[in-house]
Amino acid sequence: MKLWIALAREAGWGHTLLLAGLALLASVVEVAGLGLAVGVLLGAGGAAGLPLPALSLDLRQLLALLVALMALRGLLQVGIAVLQEWLNSALTDRLRSDLLSRVLYASSLRLEQVGRGELLGLLMDDIDTSVYALDRGLQLLQSLISLLIYAAGVVLAGRGQAAPLLLGLVAAALAGLAQRSGAWQLGTLQTRLNAALQSIVGDGLHGLKAIRAATAEPWLLGRFSEAARDYRRNARRSLRREAVFGALRDWLVVLVVALWLGLGGTGLQPAAVATVLLLAYRAAGALGGVISSRRACLWALPGYQALRELRERLGTPVLAAAATRPLAREARLEAVRWQGPGQPAVDLRRGALVVLVGPSGSGKSTLLDRVAGLLAEEDSQWQLQVAGSRAPIELTGSAGAAAWRTLVAYAPQGAVLFEGSLADNLLLGRLPEREERDELLAPWLQRLGLEALLGRPEGLHGPLNLAVDCFSGGEIHRLGLLRAWLLDQPVELLDEPTAFLDAQAAATVRQLVLERSRERLVLVASHDPELVAQAAAVIRPAAFTRR
Image (cartoon, rainbow, N blue to C red):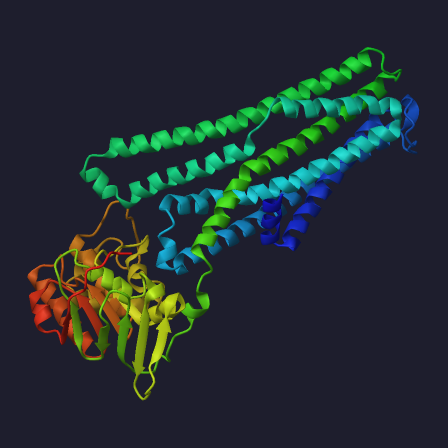
């Protein structure tokens, strides 16, 4: 109950109360239609021996009213369903946006605690399940209201008619006890299985080329089939238990009430007997709805619990610091000193190319990640020296790293491409006008020897299909460099900028690095002896673990 209340509070009490009001309206409309049908069955009131208030309507008028009420009920149900879906979709979108925001702005230390499958499972399935838990909790309320109305209707009709109702409710409760659901345990297992399934899918899409190159398709398909089989088996188990409960409940209700009536429990007329049986059946069905909704809510709530736990691990997004630049755009950044535990200070200054050297695995990329504020930022410090200012600007910790990254363009060694057009990949949403994009990108692509990309069928603006890599390693590497250069930041960090390139392409990239280092602060990790020879300073990272 505490977990469901937390979910309702997160949805917003206005949102939850509106959904509850819709549930109440649906119950009232349903019960009103049934009550009018009973009136028709009894011939306009108490003619069949029930002490119901007589209606001043004949049978034709009652039938016309019943048809009109059913039409109104249908329209209301459509409106209620549409509004409920709109409210639930809005909540789903808000939860997904919040989780993705936490991932994008989380510190590296917190991100190390998150698995890809866990994250994908929450984004794609468990958040939907969380919203479903809220909806099922409100459906429990709706069924409870219906139950009370049905019970009050029979009790008001007389003690003789209340007995079969009570027996029917007891039968429904016995059915619930006879078929236990284990809903919470099954829901928890479903959340774990969903994470495993999403992890396998992520592995397949991320490493498709490696899977195919190793002819390991059967291995991945086997993992997927096994996880999918467990997932569906657990879902079938939940469905089977609920279906058995529903069948057992309906059978017991009809059996108990029919036996009571058949053994002379009342002297009602046939129409009244049918009415009592109908009301008892509907009341027991409402009680079954209460039990089923509670079970469904319990089954779905572990997804919301997993979401809460993951958000707690990720922490609150550092949005304010990320949006605030540590210095004005027009200010001239002259020098930066980075300091972190276990490493000598890294000093960068405008016009001086600094190169990290060392054998593979010596920590060059790790040090670049730390200077960029992408790794171990909680223990890092940046001192920024701005032209015209004596006192340096100091940035520390996660908030400082978020602000520092607004000044940095970083080109990692393993560049990646995203779904979308080539222009979108390079500009990341900047320059919305197509003409501006063409004017900016075409000269760059030509200088980097990538003019052939302009002649591809999709050109700059057609979507790329990236299930299979459609670019060579050298092309992707140069596109990663270009993406960083197009950011036009005062600080540039480049990891192995001349790797994977032929002599001509490497010479072009080397020349661009030197040109840009004259007006910027540039730090490069490289094995390129020609680039190292032209550096103003060379750094050899001290040995340390990635953590």
